Amino acid sequence: MNSLSSMVVPILYLLSAVCFILALKLLARVRTARRGNLLAAIGMLLAIVGTLLELGLIDYRWIILGCLVGGVLGAVAALRVPMTAMPEMVALLNGCGGAASALVALAYYFSQAVEPGRVGSPTEVLGGAQAIMVAASVLIGGVTFSGSLVAYAQLQGKILGGRPVLLPLRHVWNAALLLATLGLGGYFAFGAETIEGGQTLVLVETGASLVLGVLLVIPIGGADMPVVISLLNSYSGLAASATGFVIGNNVLIISGALVGASGIILSQIMCAAMNRSLPNVLLGGFGTAEASGGGEYKNVRSCTAEEAALVLESASSVIVVPGYGLAVAQAQHAVRELCELLERRGAQVRYAIHPVAGRMPGHMNVLLAEADVPYEQLVEMDKINPEFKHTDVVLVIGANDVVNPAALTDRSSPIWGMPILEVHNARSVFVIKRSLGAGYAGIKNELFERPNTMMIYGDAKRVVQDLIKELKQT
Image (cartoon, rainbow, N blue to C red):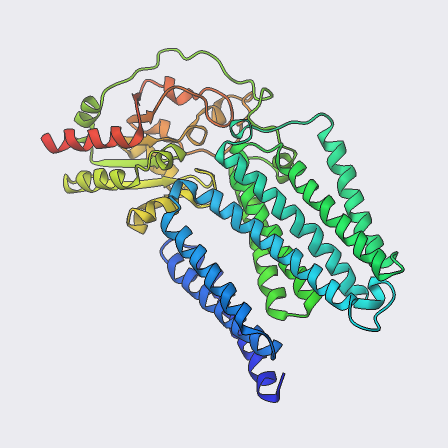
């Protein structure tokens, strides 16, 4: 690296880190999220330019080819992947990040080990700190990659329909494998006496970490996928940060630490929104036979779209509660049209957003933003809950556990203590669902039996379109 590059590169890295920090702040609010995403992209571009300048003499043909292939894949995914599949895409991106970090750390060690004249242990080849970071990057990156693939399969329903897979003695096996993987990493860093021994150990550690990632995620069902995706995102950041220490890249250390810290914080926030601890989520099994709060429904009333429209046309305040069923039905655009129609009739319309609604953090926010729903109409749970008692109509579309009053009334319920959207306090509640099927928690929803609740059975998009047609005729 020449003198000019040595001056420019640190500045580019500093600007990149500043962009990442500011982007995280902007991404924290729906109104500024798009600007945050753009700023993060600019920061990544600066980091890439700085890295290329720092490396100096490299073969740009491979760099350009990689940019073209990655750019085409990213553009196709952005245009073709539907919003319902966005959680799966995020899971895959997390996995790719973890795999990339592990591969870079491995490549760096192998490239140093094969240099002419290099002999001795990984500590002698790399240095003690770098050897530890290689082992850490391989462990975290491997777990992130395989765990993300399992999360993808769970979200797709390809593993027992998205239900947890509870292996016998799973906690014992997971603990033993984790200790074994840590032992392999420690022995690689400090115990291996030859380059060949170090290479064998780090490859065995890679395989063990991949198996560990699978075993850690398969006991976790679809109900906890938002937390799992957030946690895997944190893992990918930690793997990147560890790799930054391996290759001595400051911007990778900073950006990885930011991702790792923000992912952990978000995971804790989402666990609090479910009144559960992070260890409880990671131990898995939620939504299986352990959750035995089911039972037969009594006094459930239903109505048609025409009957619901008669109530909606006279409502002065309406709150829409979106859930995963709305995403599956691709009903977000129809919902926006319905709400615009109600607003033209003089109704105040808002959307109540539960932190864990959907299949990934912020899923409902992203879904409604795609339909150009005004940001100011999206209201978080804590702010909207006091408003339900003053609301004429609540329209629940595809949500279940996040509106279940059992969380407030039934101490024996698996969701007891979970903060919910208190829609049962509204004057009238219409729930659009295909059936009375249980949510992820595997229990019945007491809301369906409330005297102010009416069920509208059917596909969410079709029902909303029927409501629009009825309102236009009145």
